[in-house]
Length: 242
Image 1 (cartoon, one colour):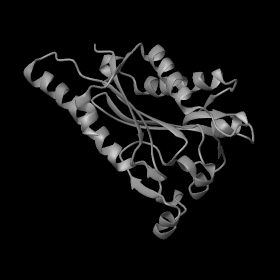
Image 2: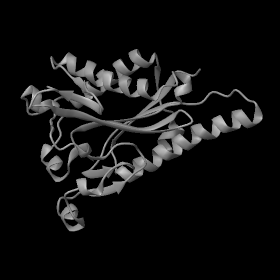
Image 3: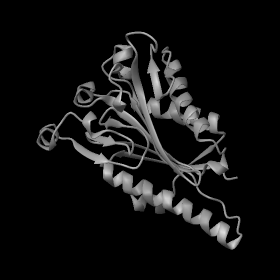
């Protein structure tokens, strides 16, 4: 088992560019696994964790309903936003400046072979980060992600999640609203859920801006703890592929 995770913070990057990059890393892991099986080899499979932010974009999961996007093509353009139908689970969501977006591209056979546990661990990372700021992040039964005040009229989501997995290899991940412009969520029915709102960490803390670099450090800390992983900086050759 290889528990090293190569970490790369991409900064602000176009959604499609990062999606293509994810696909290349994902395919590379699958290639190693297929070769191991065919040639009876036991080569280590790599793991990756990408952090990024995207310009305004809406993405629709493979099981999503296009009716949950409330804008037409011209309206998208007027708001400086793009739209992609993608190959993760879940419905529609928004990505934009002020989010910390994480894409773990892991071979779960290096950790544990349980997608349910994997999603719960990603949620727990964010729940632990929120606790550091005195906030009680919780799960909502049947609704992947991290929420506040579930079971009340004030229930609101602060972190959306959606993943793809094949042969125990993962891609896509989570979008944590840290300093997000919540107005962009008014243009969709987030995750197809009509009766719950969306929030951002800075709103909950009643501050203008939360230190996003501090948030990233905390996410890495709890990711390492939960997955019993070792974070290593990505090599120069990986940087050249971005």
